[in-house]
Image 1 (cartoon, rainbow, N blue to C red):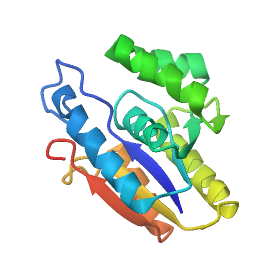
Image 2 (image 1 turned 90 degrees about the vertical axis):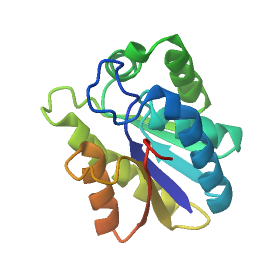
Image 3 (image 1 turned 180 degrees about the horizontal axis):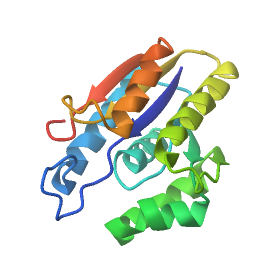
Image 4 (image 1 turned 60 degrees about the horizontal axis):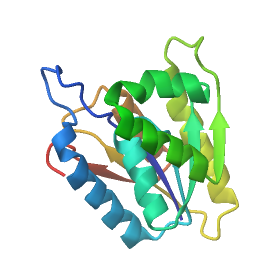
Length: 176
């Protein structure tokens, strides 16, 4: 089985409506480790933004599960736009995830005004590709988002995974 993932970035400290507060990162990480340990996938497919993406990639590495990273922007630009603003610890995790990955797919979608949405399609497609060569071709999705959030990019990802008839497990980053 392959796990495909999408989820929220860590909140900027000035965010008025919390979505994924930094103080919940350890609880979300432990939940991701537990899910991966229970499911025992042969691979994890995810982007690598500061937040749940890097947490699931770190959890997979801890459990010695291969990772397949999909970036919608060039490696350096993605780091600058989706990682570096959260500080050195996230930047270190990003570098470690890139170094450890079994595969990295980079699609430079910078010219696409909705590159996050298009990126969801690329991640889901990559999961299907990895599943075709996996010992167990099933795909399950893990999303980290608030349950009431039905309009975000992560909610779009969850809908698209569900439309593929993949099981979708949600983790609430406010109450993991």
